Image 1 (cartoon, rainbow, N blue to C red):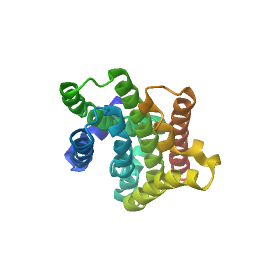
Image 2 (spheres, rainbow, N blue to C red; image 1 turned 180 degrees about the vertical axis):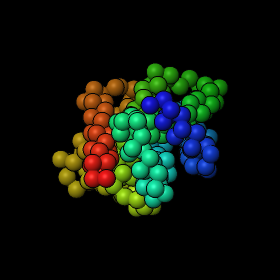
Image 3 (cartoon, rainbow, N blue to C red; image 1 turned 90 degrees about the vertical axis):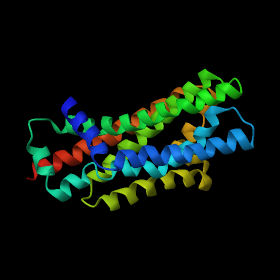
Image 4 (cartoon, rainbow, N blue to C red; image 1 turned 90 degrees about the horizontal axis):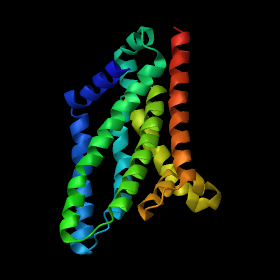
Length: 226
């Protein structure tokens, strides 16, 4: 599986995808950071990640839409399905590689935390809890994005499905409070308070695992009909 992770991770930087994702995220994050810190005189690093979560919604599909759809379009999916590696390892490898890109981006945000330390005394514990929640949110997004990529050979369609689902989970709670627990953004919003909500953490992990398992099932079914 390490070979798959290495291959997929490198592929993000052999193409502009990795640079575009990290670059766009940091540019937009910098804008929100500037507004919060220099316009509103805030030193709450964690609250900037509310905006960061919104950015993530639209940028994660850049990482995931080609994960499997591109393999299918170019015909290299057949190599994956017939390789000695199990489908599970292939899917997990793609998932971990994309997650590493997000993790690297998160590490880059420590620079902003350092700037806040110069201007004030931000709460490091709350910031770390926020980063954990952000990573859990990203993993949920990535797992669904890869699932969407596995059901179509058109990466644009995969991207649209992914963004559409994320936006849907935003607005569902506005129609009924029943859907509040189904909103990934709402679950993340509790982490910047500095408290790790066990129920939300379990939901994030369960959602991620479910999407990965569904992707494996889709791939296995395609393998069985060949």
